[in-house]
Amino acid sequence: AVDSQKLDAAQSCMYMYKLRFGSGIDQAGLQPLVTPDYFERGGLLHDMLEQYYKLKRYRANWFKNHKAHSDIVRISTDVGRYKAAKMSIDVAEVETVIETFRQYTEHWENDGWFNIVAVENVGSKVLYEDKDLIIIYEMKIDLVLNVEGVLVPVDHKSAKSRRDPNQLSNQFKGYCWGLGVNNLIVNEIGFQKTLKPQDKFRRHTISYSASQLAEWVENSVAWIKYAINCIETETFLKNYTSCDKYSGCLFKSICEADPLVRDYKIKTLFESKHWDVGAQHL
Image 1 (cartoon, rainbow, N blue to C red):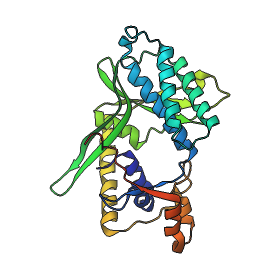
Image 2 (cartoon, helix red, strand yellow):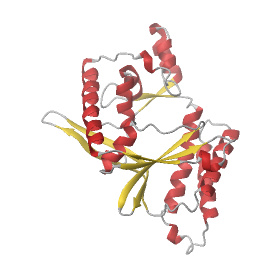
Image 3 (cartoon, rainbow, N blue to C red):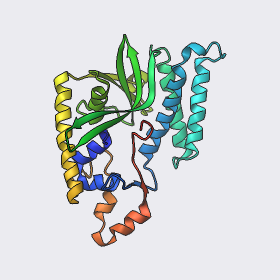
Image 4 (cartoon, helix red, strand yellow):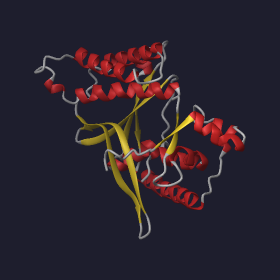
């Protein structure tokens, strides 16, 4: 079973794959003891968005329960504060995330996203099968809408800088292939304090043709078979060109250390943790 993050890792660096996901089906990978701020910030925002859209899914019941949109936002921010108490993120950053969430909900209060099919649901689909191998692709989609009878997956993306989404993303193509659709919405939520809401809360529609998704499947299967061979032969080559991509590799400090002290680095900076996107589904 694989998901977009395992596929990304296999395409980036197999040593990083080993560290993050383990070198076998039953082995645990590593997670940093201190979670980077951008992960905490994004996770907190996702927690509030999940609560908000779960309540918005049943908008027809608000009046019956004497609730207004402001009540739904308040409930969602209460959830955020509860979650934040368990995080290492500082108080000022928590307030920034909550204020950004409030601005977002005010900006998009009447956006028409009322026909919500699913929120943070997990699913799986067979990506490849022969007599020796079955590859199951797993997904956890932030939001699924029904737009005029057609399912449309939505992925929330938070950022501190304004940028357009990557149309070549394994995650985006995997969502569309998994649901058997051709369109996806990337819901950009920016933390820029100097931008107006319409400039930092943008929604991008990405479309893929059937042949583009078929090409993605073929390419993904080839990479997964490569990863399986690396695991079976215990060949975890380091790809040093991936170390500084995006916010930098979580395990850069391990690779920078002398090989003789890497085990010590791992024990002091990381903890073992199983990664399983499909746990809820299975």
